[in-house]
Figure 1 (tube, rainbow, N blue to C red):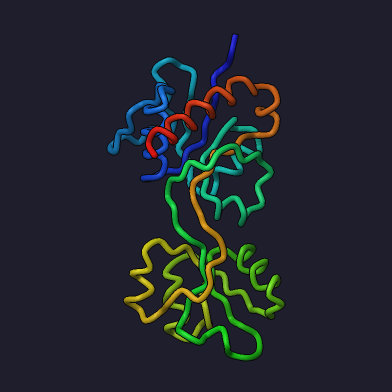
Figure 2 (spheres, one colour):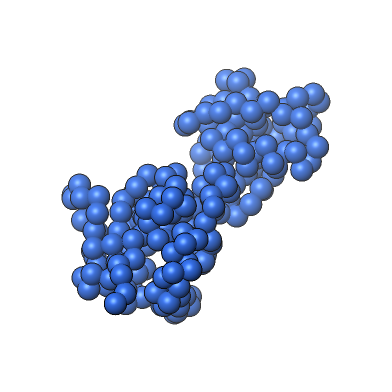
Length: 211
């Protein structure tokens, strides 16, 4: 008898898109209810159980074995160095991790002041260029940092670039593309391999059909 697969989903639009993708893949996903405060959902056939968690917490639930699978952005996975297996690029939430600032900001000498929500990604990026930096960890409104003289540049997610342009900033370097990834707990990958592989195959087929 096969057991239920527990899946950690990020709260918000991305998680709802994943449920819709699972439904299109024939995985029996429940329909999201925007007004519900329930944190646990179960598929119609009982084969899948979903937990709503904060996006940054998804890799923790998966790595620690509280969930067999999870969906997290590549940015979250790289920032936290999660000990999980990446199974599939879902192609959802596509954007870019970039260095941004006023034009010419990277040409200044000395230590570069970098404001970001992603200190590990930013540090690795500038270390690979041999650039000495001072990381300023912020949790929101990153674009304000260069405007108020707190930082020279920022490292952040860029989707359309509209906010940057409206504040006189521009993308100076692209670090990496970002999209949502399906990840698995290492033990679950071993002991529930058939179930995980079947779900990955259905999702792959649904993604291929959508494209």
